[in-house]
Length: 565
Figure 1 (cartoon, rainbow, N blue to C red):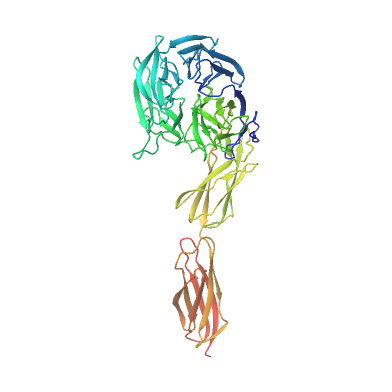
Figure 2: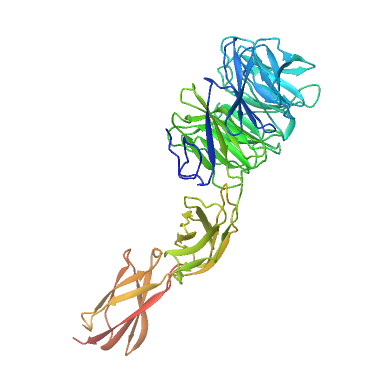
């Protein structure tokens, strides 16, 4: 049995991943009385969820009906196994494929009628879609390999089914969306007969089905081919999200199936894409996966690919909730308040229906009190702490939220490590500025499912050169013949000195002043000055380091009394 993270969630059987946004959500779970899974349809007008099996039996079949709270309310029997389903645009009719017909169920009374008899039996089940005011379904004519043999797209007009003449290998999958009312999308799963599967679309608005854009994904070496599992049309009809088991989540433009601007973050390591669904209100995207252990099987996130808000993550594991999201096992209520997820066990013999309610409200967030820094004098290459406070309205996350920061200086913009805010909202960003001059620190909070992003806050800090010191060790007395030896160390703050650093040496005696040869500074900062004085009495040696791009200069002196012998 899976454990439940401390998020105030109702129900049991899921673990929220450590990387997820820790926000409130509820999850109800119903065990489905099926041993295989074909399709799920969401009827928001009547608050019903319809689930069918992927059975090959020709003797019986049923549609399981649940309400939006996960309670079973009806079982619709059929004169044969039921596979594909589709809902009319007005939600008045549920179309379902059984062995010899496309049946029509009145969604108000749940009574059944015949929409059209099919000229061929559904040996391998069918996919069903409703687009352009018509029903469309796929047909396999063979009783053997349902996953490789040719499927043909059929339409229904005037109560009769007809062959559109569009066909391809494998169990072709269909998808429609409210935002694209006259568009039918088709995806080809991988099969032995097709090494480079396709995506395509059709215009269903006229009397003749017209194929639109099509795309394959393998490169010249045959790599990167589509491993299709599921697809979903965005609420505005402009984007198509595709669950590709080999790639992850592809985001395409519906107009021409080209790559859309922006993309979603990869699924967690070890997770293989199995399902995808946009919410009908355009707010969310749900991505389902097959993953083991505590790796997330479901991510619920903002539909906008440009949003960096952290997703809500669920890991299904155990006998009470399944182990993974089933292929094509995600659907939303039209208003985005409920996500329905069908999960299955590792062997694919048991199934569960999860009703998940993402947080309905979003609250404001803000940085309060501005930013401060310490120490008061910032030095290049030395630790600097930038401090602030983040305030969140509404429901407070249980786990700390993270803020991100960037530093902009003369050398460009540098992204710093994200830091967690403490329980009181305070945070500390640590940095070592590496350029002299003004450094502007900009701190951001990108929000999560329950909080809007905060307006960025910035602080400009003057960054000074690092200081240096010269420490000398010299004799008190010396002789003209014996000479003078002075040892020293060039100490520094911050970054290492530039290679080839030298110290300038000047000698002053009763005959005047003059520069001696500069001495090199070793890697450890040490150096040695040797000199033969030219006269007796007091001789002063003045050593100076001019500094470099990151370091200030330094000066030190030593006085030596020189005797004749």
